Length: 380
Image 1 (cartoon, rainbow, N blue to C red):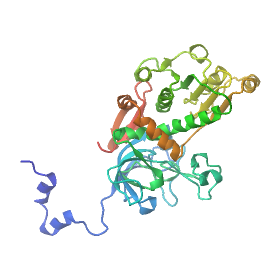
Image 2: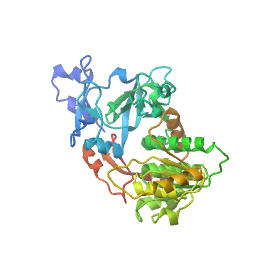
Image 3: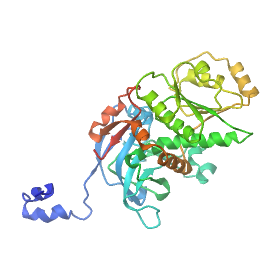
Image 4: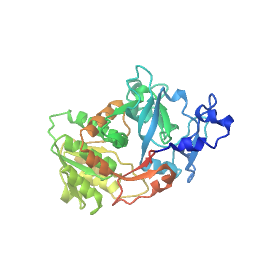
């Protein structure tokens, strides 16, 4: 016969504490564990006991299943940026989330047990014209806040609360793989804007070049394949999981030079931020091409550039180059549909490391040949 561990423990409780074990005092709830940082202070990350999320964060209570890790988290941990909520000294990290609803009010569109991802950005309080239109990813005055990044606690806590308009339902068949929804929303926005720009004239794209085979690059390639396009992935890793993931999609994989391996692309999605790759991608695409920059450069590197020649090419060939970051709800919903239609075995291979919360400090370690996406597994 199996005996519940708690029942064994209760045999040793004093009589006056027996009932309290089942019925804590009113208002008394155990603290939650969360990964926190002091913004602007390097090496300040630690697991902290935090109170239950406040009602002001939203009426939907979510049990965290996993939180994804990206370069933004690593840079906040390094003290490069990040902003705590007003009046608080620490910031709960985590902006790539997946969890299950515990509490949801009637009319919220969600029910207990639903899988959800939280949208990261919140509109500015003014609001600017774009935020007022629900396009907070295009905020014009910079007064927005972001969960786990700027002015709002993130999702790397055992539970979080969220507003109905910022909780996106995830196909339950994806389960924990829904943690990929936030990075997928970034490329869903990129494709949305690429296609809007493409409508400026007759446009029949065939070849797509994606530079960088990290999570953003691979998900951008996935959405390109779902559009029936010929996708080429460019990365420096000649061996390891990245070429295998490209092959699993049916995409071409290159490690040489853009001008010889994959010239004349109709669409370029640049996800490395490396200045020379950015320039090469612009120089060697086809006329009327569209280049979307999603990678962030670390700066500080000087390269020789014929600005006049590059400008002439852009003008004479009607090329378009634009930057894209963040996403609004429509992009999260498009990403949810894209992931629901993807091969779950392939998506599962993108998650190369699952760390329990107690081993959070290992998330700063990276091996580009073996690692794609690291997650903190709250269910571990």
